Amino acid sequence: MLDKDGLNEANEYPFTIDIDPKDEGYDIKKEVFMIGSENSQVKEYRLRQNVDKGNWDEYLAWARFVAYKGDLGDLYDVVKETQNEAVAKLKADGKDTEKAAERIVVNAIDLETELNAWKLTLKEAKKGIKAYPTTFKEDIELLEKIESGKMELSYNKMNCLKLRIGEKRILDFVVETSEAIIGLAKLERPEAVKALMKQHKTFKKSMKYVQNVFIPLLPDNSVKA
Image 1 (cartoon, rainbow, N blue to C red):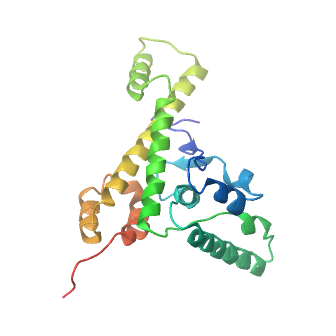
Image 2: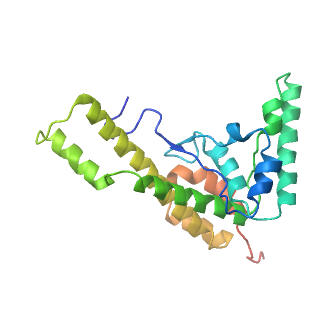
């Protein structure tokens, strides 16, 4: 079911990212961290046009792992600690712990990793946009011609057109949001807070994430009186 703006009911776009074979840590990430769990980790993450809702937390937890460039021993400790916490919680609830013991979750650990995760996300969104045979503008113009009666399109093709427009809107949102967050990384914390307020409309659908996750990672060299 599509709304009048051409968005699908769940307002989602499928993202799939995996470790780059050119990554220096590729073999270790695959053979040490992901042994037996690749099928459950490398999957579609259906992202919404709102970073504060849906699967964004799960996606970013995986994107940080894929984009991580630091010491893999430190990363191993982070992943194992998260897995152990998840297993302990499930055991206390009397639930199966097998998947939790394998699942890789990397919470926000440092600015470099967070920034790399967003750069990767930006790259994938741009790749997604280029994969379409038509541009967003061309689709909108076609939709306008159809709605004005200048052209006809079957019901199924019309729905496909609206779905395509909706998916491109989500990808445009991901590009805009990624670029805005990457821009904040150039600032210290006080300046980033000011930028957030100035660009509050841009950050409207990522506000909680930016406030509670990204900005705390930024340096703060301000002198308190």
